Every structure is written in structure tokens, then in C-alpha cells.
Amino acid sequence: MAALDGLPPLRDVIQRHGLDARKALGQNFLLDLNLTQKVARTAGSLEGVTVFEVGPGPGGLTRAILALGAAKVIAVERDARCLPALAEIADHYPGRLEVIEGDALKTDFAALAPQGPVKIIANLPYNVGTQLLVNWLLPARWPPFWQSLTLMFQKEVGQRIVAQEDDDHYGRLGVLCGWRTLAHMAFDISAQAFTPPPKVTSTVVHLTPKENPIPCSIDKLEKVTQAAFGQRRKMLRQSLKPLGGEVLLQKADIDPQRRAETLSVEEFCRLANSL
Ligand code: SAM
Image 1 (cartoon, helix red, strand yellow):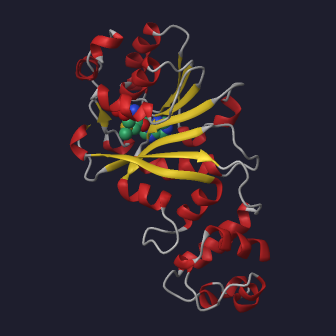
Image 2 (image 1 turned 120 degrees about the horizontal axis):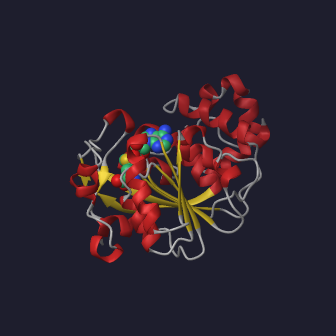
Image 3 (image 1 turned 180 degrees about the horizontal axis):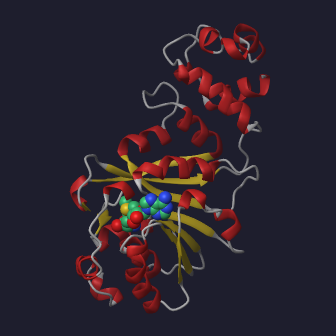
């Protein structure tokens, strides 16, 4: 794609701007522009779409998103060293790339969202990825400001996101994602594709918001999943004792001898609504 978008190869960009990867910032860069295009394509059509990207780094994924026709990319990057490299991309695509220097965890994405369709695409820094996902899933207003999330995670986190009942990876994250979204793992990316390679395989997860999730209070759902999965090997009558134990389970019409990992999302919502 270096030839296609007319920008220099990423390896040159990294060298010229001295962007040696910093572990503390979760910096594992994707330099293969075919691969970054594959990630961006997972989000579907980007025509007329504003894309939020977290952690553009030297801009490999940013370039793919712009080359695939996104109307605009708003990228939040914490590492100021990356800004000159990103400015070159912004010059190449006038008016289509806005870079905000800052911490994505402190960024109010909903407030930045323009009118019109918004998608979020990111190769997330692993140390903040799950928290960002949870933040995007929690707004009181639903459907949210975004049409889809296309996010890269460590594979184990991806498995927890898409997990359903009776799956070893099923837990609080799976319940939250299953309640409000349809989520699937699109494809894996081997560690060797990154510079420097991380220790684990990564996976791209694609989530779209459910139009009408089961009505349920987020706080109560969090309470029951926290208690139930906090002692996931115990029977629910034991793990849910602080929340009412057998009385609560009876109200929700759930067998007190069952364990957390056997309950469907619908049953967790019933428990939350019985609190
Ligand atoms: N998007 C690039 C790619 O695919 O090659 C870089 C991805 S790298 C895994 C994660 C990026 O997120 C780094 O550029 C890092 O500086 C940035 N980052 C780390 N923590 C951040 C935070 N809290 N807010 C915004 N960006 C962050």
C-alpha cells in the first residue's frame, strides 16, 4: 500500500521519527499495510463514516482506514513522539485526519462524535483495551453513538468477549458484551506480524450494538455478575448470598444449585431485575 497511498513505508517513518516501541505504552506496531487494510475492512463500508481510532502510533491502521474511504478519522494518541508522523498523513489527506494528543481513557468520545455514522477501529494498547471496551458498552443511552467496534485484543480477551454460557472463557465481560452487542472474532493475527512481537496471538473482534437489549439496570447487572463470577466454582445460592441468595434465585426462577458459568445472559438479566 505504500505505493498505493503514496506515503513512505512504515519502517522508514518509524526510523525517521525515532519511534522505538515503548512497552509501557503497549506499543506493538503493525507494519504490513495489507494486514492493516484487512483489519479496517472488517468494519464494513467506511464511505461517509467518521472513524474514531485509539492509539494510531506511526499510522499504519490510520492510513488503511483513510485509503478505504472514511470521511474522517479522529485519532487519540498518548505518545507525543508520534504526532509529526501523523501530521504527514494529515497533510496527505487534507481535512480528513484529526489527531488528539491525550489519554483515550479520559476522552469523552460521545461528546466528540459528529452527526452521522461513527465506527471505532483500533489496535488497542493491551493495558487499557478492556477498560475502553467496557466504557463504550456502558452508556445509559442505547443504541450508542457508534455503529460498530472493530478492535484488536490479545486472543484470550477476544475469547472472553464472545464467550457464552458453558464456555470456560465466559465471565462478566461476556455477559456485558452479550447483553448489549452481537460480537464475533473475525480473524487472528500472529505475534510475528507486530514490531516488536508481543508474547501472545492477537485477534480482531467485531461488535455491533443490539437495537433492543433486554431492559436491565447496568449497575444491578454488574452487581450480580460480580458476585456470581467472583466465586464461579460455587453454587449460586452460596456466591449470591450477599445479594439475597436463595430468595433472589427463587424470585428469578433459577435453580440455586447452578453455577455462574451455566447462566445465559437472559438469566443474568432476570437476576438483576429481581434484585
Ligand atoms: N495503531 C498502531 C498500529 O496498529 O501499529 C499502534 C498500535 S499500538 C498496539 C497501541 C498505541 O496506543 C500506541 O501508539 C500507544 O502509544 C497508544 N496508547 C497507549 N496508551 C494509550 C492511551 N491511554 N490513550 C491513547 N493512546 C494510547
